[in-house]
Length: 255
Image (cartoon, rainbow, N blue to C red; front, side, top):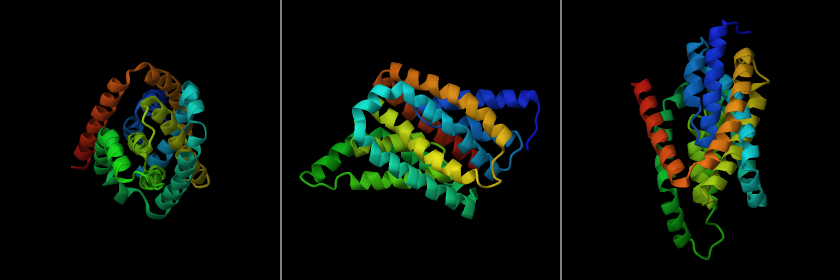
């Protein structure tokens, strides 16, 4: 058990609200919660697993705001969600087997790549469509990319929303609000499977996790509503800028 003062729990709750809203809108909530958990005294591996447990409800809480988008998508949601769940399970098992240290060094480069991927995804999608016209395999590569990044989500997860959103756009989910709705469903599936695995171990600080679970769910709900109010151009630009900021931050942290 981790006991701390009320001020620590207040800061954890505030970080959870901000992270939940950020994850619902664009992804990258880990930027707010992981450093706070380290500051609260958790070892990096425990902070990582606690963070993933804490932020899982945020994506679920965002989904009611996206009911119309998910209803329109219908059965198109099934394959990405299953891929996310399978990848998240594998990533969690890899984390427990190998530890997070080596993978953490790749975080800024993965986020930078994800931001570039997101910014160019519509253009890349048109190129893929031209090159694969008349074939039935045009979505296999993007779905494979989605699986790989879902593994990453179960392993560490920083910037996962950015990466999943980019992969979904490349897969063919061109409407940003629909892609954002499905992004929350996929990241929830990936995180839920990882959390189920972590819950069987002693690597989670449950007092800290429960505090952030409640606050991130609150932030996730209001973040989902906010994302639907923002114009798609503004939302896309905000996601790209935030991704560049995350890249710079993690590069600076690793310097």
